[in-house]
Image (cartoon, rainbow, N blue to C red; front, side, top):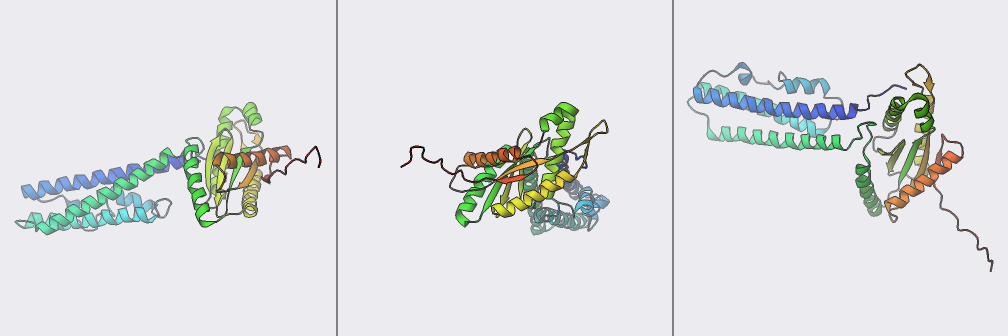
Length: 308
């Protein structure tokens, strides 16, 4: 099993926020130099006069190198890039006109300010969204936090209640994790947690969600999925993890398996009760030998001892 960078997701988002902030500073710097040139009637810097300078800008080059990689391939980021490109082209036209003419038409200058405002507003919203995503990620495992889990499950329950669509949740627990910690040390244990989290995230479907529930447990939400389909999805992930090998620092191989407890998300029941059902199914999976997926079944009422 490839040892992941547990903070890679967080690092990517931090790099995106940094790139957005640098793009904003770059635009502000160009505006400052434009105003200096326009007021002083000195020749603008070459980059101010260049049409299509977005591609040659630091932000444009950064984006072009990564544009096909998620999450930069989403429409919201494409909008930011289009705003940046249009702004720089408009600025190039006005910079040349301000240098060579006595004045710039007020409507063209107002149009520039509108483009600047639109770019700033969109950049601020995007940066805020990525910053929120950073705080929603568990720094060790890269899974989403328990706080996000509570919010998402409430939303999923409302959606299921309105649409009638099925959904499932599952608890995943790393088998013999205490023994791994005791044998190889907590450093290896932390890397095992990160590896299993990455395996869950990478091998589940794009619309499934993985949360760090606590310790060596993860909670998984599978929307628009009945229990039998969810069991097949989780069993495929379980088998994939069991086939992989994880190397400890001393060269030994750590065998990793994961047990799953699965339950249907009943929109009429509270979240703690649903998680408890998944936990009971997980307990059964452990009792039956681990490395398996068990679906929660309603307990049959005990027979009346008194008869009658």
